[in-house]
Length: 264
Picture: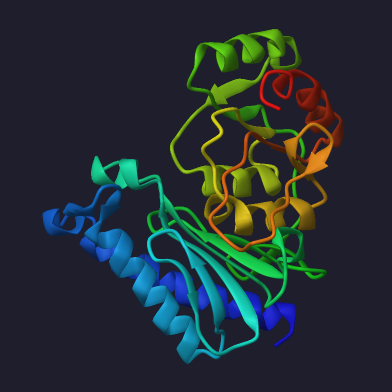
């Protein structure tokens, strides 16, 4: 498959899984905790995506939030977050998304060739096909660069101090923290948000794989440490110390100098 065909397949499968999540949104049984951090809907969505992709001919190594690393015959590596924003879902807040990314079998994060971030409720899905552009749904989009939104995640005194140190660069911006990092990085990639900053050391490859590809394809930059483009070997569900993304590459470099000080 070429990258456009892969993207269309991801869009189709994610849309079907989104329908499942949407139908179950007000069903209390979907919120049943079947493991420490896993609701029933998390596992149902993940298994649906894996089975549906395999039926569509996309198979290989699956790296998924709930089931970890699973090997099947096939030439791809597939990174899945079946419900990014589970806390919002559990509380009945309609801000969450499905994230799926594809690389060649031996690929790393920087080798993702297509990805989709699909919000089940209201918003259009966002995705990319490497070398072919970024998309809202199946329509190609040109990213804007004049947004006044910044998505920011901090959770400790040192991170708040670092944020305060760099806040003058955010003067005039509206700061939000809404609970689905994949969706918010994807929105940053197409310019709906000016920047995304996470200083919690909690985001994992399943959260960022598809969204990072959107940022890159749209011409932006996404870093995990000062001067280091976000990357990972995709052999396990790895966490990143920081994630800093924007279409404004100068801003990304600036935040490297601020946010990276206490997080290396």
